[in-house]
Length: 184
Image 1 (cartoon, rainbow, N blue to C red):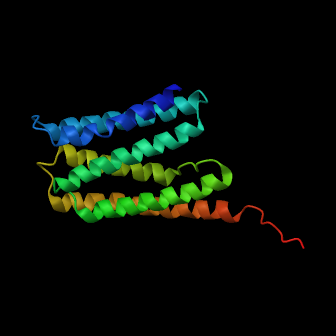
Image 2: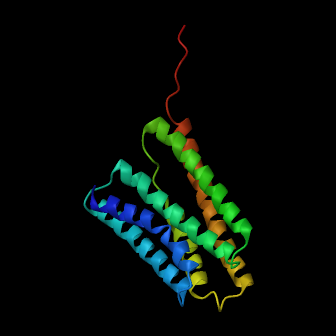
Image 3: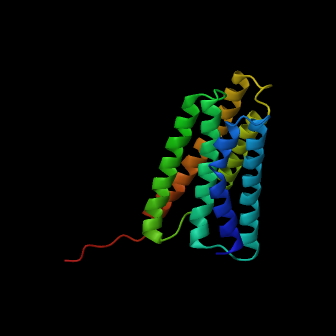
């Protein structure tokens, strides 16, 4: 296993730590959980950098990396929803968006045996989503629910736009392949 894949696996293993720490009785538990989330995000950036710089991109890494990212983000979102800092509908939107992306990627994977890369809007929406969730975790005693809802709504709007571009990419990949002719 190469270094980028090990970092993705480490990030995947850190997912259950977030709710355990967040809902613990530790003083500042929300900030400790946010620190785990920040460290996970740093490993995401680091594994991508290492993989590209040293040509260590693998099929396993192209599956592990987004899986770890999505599970971590969803876990943090669920913590914030359970703790009543975000509305349930935000989790539903993210869940259905990820289901659509996962199914689309599966279709393309079956067709071309590869996972489609993320686009720039996808990376931006992930960064904004992370920032919003991180800030809500750290400053939850200061931010109002109205501000939280406005911020998560903006992040989700970017996520939906990224989904539309991604689905357009998947559709183009699916329809641009040569069609089989019926020969009789």
